[in-house]
Length: 194
Length: 275
Image (tube, rainbow over all chains, first blue to last red; front, side, top):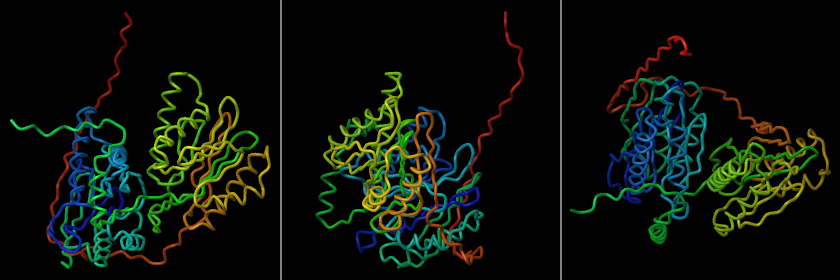
């Protein structure tokens, strides 16, 4: 999930990698860094998570070489949307969540997409994954506008942890990135490991 | 030496690479995530000076509301707008595709684009995919021949009518239109009628909700009134659920400082060289 705060954005994910009921690994990274201020979270089928992130990285590098500048989050969102819609009939089973700051104005930006690339930009929070309904509930209750980075961290951590505690196939650790103008703080949370 | 990694340069159009794999996964019992549907109420009406298009703003993912305020009135050109119902990604991408095709056409012909051109481009594209691109659209605009309104169905058939509704809430909206539509209405009357039709959809159809967006297109200008009316206000929060700093237990913290590039631009007045 991702949330907007005051001049900052937060993106968080759990760390489980499993095959239906069997947990295979507890340190699977689903959040990828696409730029100093741009992060994408990719929940879904693990193989597609890796394929999409690698293909996206390639397209992003080509963009940066051609344009000779850092990509804007909104443009990046269109790039992801395009990549997913190319496979409209035979989609990648990922539902990306994008969080970032504009490289020039540092305006916070969050967006999410469905598996065929329909973009959805919001001003508060975006959620994605198997426990999306629980996350919607938690975020609606906890989120308020203009949270400071420290408060935003608490809000997103509690929202994520309480949501995936109510889902049998999510959890086993969580990672939260708080993206601000001059630094990115990555924190690993202490969660229930069941 | 073994082949290097084949570089995949994106080359446009649909790619069917994953179809076989996906079919196999579904056989094995993998439940795919659902796409966003717009489950909408969209409507359009021709009035004395032009066209009024209206839409609700809810996007659903099965029965969960994914987006409470999405834009369903898409830009095709400055004098043509299109409302979309059906699978959200399809309406978004189809309207963008037709918008760019129309722009290229406009540059080649140096003329303001006609609504019938947009209509033809849409129906030709949708028919090619035989309804698999689930986009039901209400296309309206004003060009040199006057105001026009079309409804486009996912399989590629179109209807040219003075008033149309599409989407899951189309029956509710059509009921309002059938009751109160008159030819050659005034602008305010037409806006009220479309607004009421969309409201009928919002309050009576499960798939539609939130606010009303309107777009009024006339010969000289276009007014895109996003959130023309907030039909459903969000409740005011009674208490705050802020946690004390330090509530979440942290195992490890890594801080990555980002070095900001300082670009210094100095503008010095220089005398122009006019020799």
